[in-house]
Amino acid sequence: GENVEQHPSTLSVQEGDSAVIKCTYSDSASNYFPWYKQELGKRPQLIIDIRSNVGEKKDQRIAVTLNKTAKHFSLHITETQPEDSAVYFCAASRSANNDMRFGAGTRLTVKP
Amino acid sequence: NAGVTQTPKFQVLKTGQSMTLQCAQDMNHNSMYWYRQDPGMGLRLIYYSASEGTTDKGEVPNGYNVSRLNKREFSLRLESAAPSQTSVYFCASSVGRSNEKLFFGSGTQLSVL
Image (tube, rainbow over all chains, first blue to last red; front, side, top):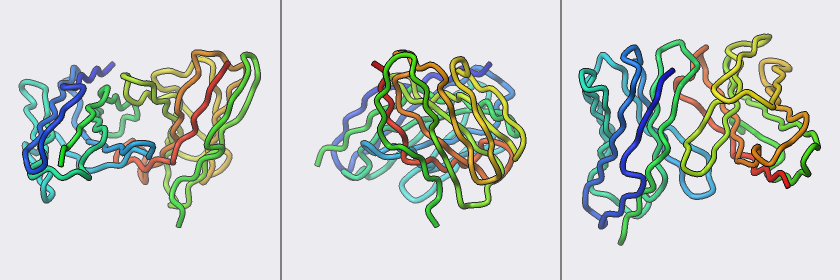
């Protein structure tokens, strides 16, 4: 089955700086890669997703890049704000396959 | 429009006790899922239902059973709780028959003593 590794496990940045979280996956047939944000004590929420036919996707301050050859994808947050502080999870799966695997999570702290 | 609703929010069980976690969604989604979240391990899929009347095992199904009661409701049952089942449980749903764009419930914190 798919195996997803996520790094780093914790990340601390100053407000206004950029943050990058990286994930690698093992199944070359995986073609759907979402990112979820989970604030303390809250439910995970989808913030952005990308399919394997696209190399990059942006949504305001958030972007995701995908390198299919190397089997890794990354989340980029620019101009970080204190409200970006949360745990971020990456995941990977094949389309129409319900066996999506999540990374272990990255705790991002943005210091004001 | 409440989205995905889970009950209860907190539960403490003794080893060997049974309980059912309830989940309902009002978004007319086809697929529903049960995940458990443990520190340092992300979210792991227990069971899922891609459509009303079907259920399938996920990554960690042992010790659990599920019922897709109708399109709205998907319950998770622990027949004989074990300390290893102490976790936070999340129900989720998605509009299609795959796990894309999941909507999560608010979670159930379960402790088994």
